[in-house]
Amino acid sequence: MNQELLRIVENIAKDKNIDKESIYQDLESAMVSAARKHFGVQPNSGVDVSVTIDRTTGAIHAFKDDVEIDIRQLGRIPAQTAKQVMIQKIKADERESVYAEYIQRKGETVNGIVGRFEGGTLIVNLENRVEAIMPKSEQITGESHHPGERVRAMILDVRESTSQVKIVLSRTHPDFIRKLFELEVPEVAEGIIEIKSLAREAGYRTKIAVDTLDDKVDPVGACVGVRGSRIRNIVDELGGEKIDIVRWSDSSQVLIANALMPAKVSEIAICFELGRATVVVTEDQLSLAIGKHGQNVRLAARLTGWDIDILTPNEYNKEVDRLANCLKEVEGVDDRFVDKLLALGIISVLDLEEVGSEPLIEELQVNPDLAQKVIQTAAEVAKRIAAEDAPTQAEGLLRQEKKKGKR
Image (cartoon, rainbow, N blue to C red; front, side):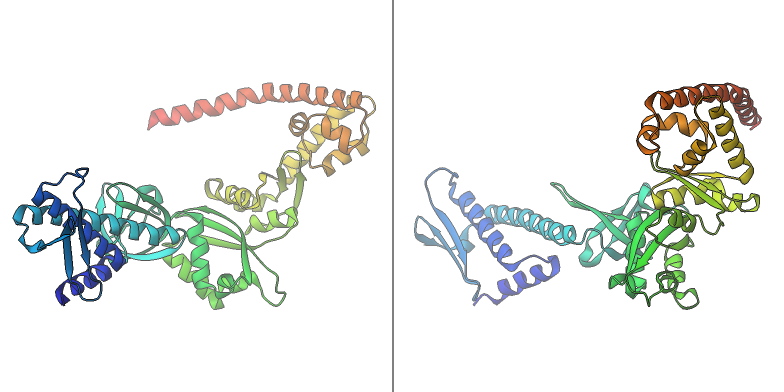
């Protein structure tokens, strides 16, 4: 009984996570290559060379045209050939094993050890000595990693090439946040709480909308945890990234108001034709609603799927007055018509020009000729507004250029 061979195969199978049968087949193929090399047998010569290994005893039986040969007498050069073939085949089996395992785990979070940097790319060692890469674009801005440090990331992609399997990790993908919530909030993992929408600017801020079918569960409170314990763990994992958790609503107006928190919204006008929501906030809430560098309103727009314009009451009233004055020039238009436009979420002349005549005809049952006159008038006023605003815009650009010059 060849116990040593059986033990070697067992160890390779465990160490490389390869099926034992594949290793036996690789060994047999390598020995056939060595025997062909020794006897000078060409692949299409008609000479039959075969090798079998008994999976129970480890005994090796080699044959050339049904005549048994001693595989140990083949010599040094054929043995070197067998070694090279064996190395290549085991590497190929290892790649297939790694690919098969990690392609199924795509989208999962994994823990690894930081190995090294290659350029801006981070090399992370996973279990079974598998190496993964985290490109610069998938690393959170401002984070620094050091060799030997533990790091958690999501498997973003798994690619197979001729020489290796590339496992791409990400800490910036929005789904990484989903996975962290599943780990930290049991109700999310169990499906009691559903993450309906998520918008993220990695390293800075994330907005997440949650909902539940269980009336006894407060989805926002459950995600935050007692004294903020659950959300704190996620924020710490992300290096201090801010996370806003809001309640989902099927009402677009309620959802938009929730998404713009912590700002308080006074009024929302939704235009389905343009996919746009005009939100009115008081002066003291304006900076909160917009956020630093426009981040709050930008994330709210992505979370809700609506383009969001933020206006103060004065700005809103100015647009509505301009719309009303514009339409007074059209014969057959009265205040009720203006109110109907406002109900459609059309609050400015620019909106009216962009929407066109079709919604007026279909939604408001307006005569096509009248609808066309309304749109033409709105277009003329819009051109006038653009001409009036042009000098102001030019002055703003000039100021910016001067600032750049001073720098």
